[in-house]
Length: 126
Image (cartoon, rainbow, N blue to C red; front, side, top):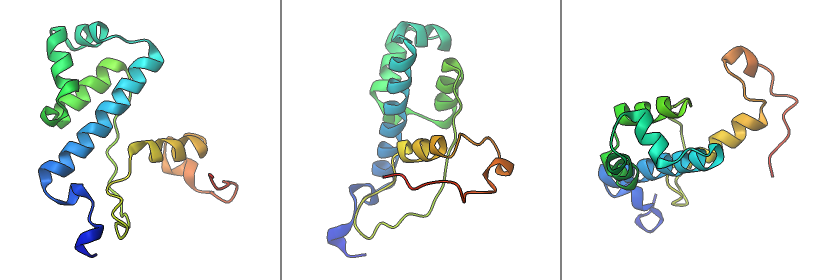
């Protein structure tokens, strides 16, 4: 890959983590909005002051797997980490998790590999 095609996340581990954290926080904010969960509600579920919840979501660089799992559990959602091959030849960087969520929903929300055995009936997403 040529240097002029590199995505900013390839500059350092910190940049890569920042992008991942941003994606997670964006998902959490979207879920909170969809479900009507306020920052007060999240803070109470986490057992922390509202300011700590705001700081955690506002400064994604401080997120850890532990804090992400605690947030997911507090919201009653699942957290899945997906490693995948990705063609970065055009400098697109890591895929947003929304791509995986949409594909999962499009495939009928399979919960295990037995439900994913036959993809012949799946149509392409445009």
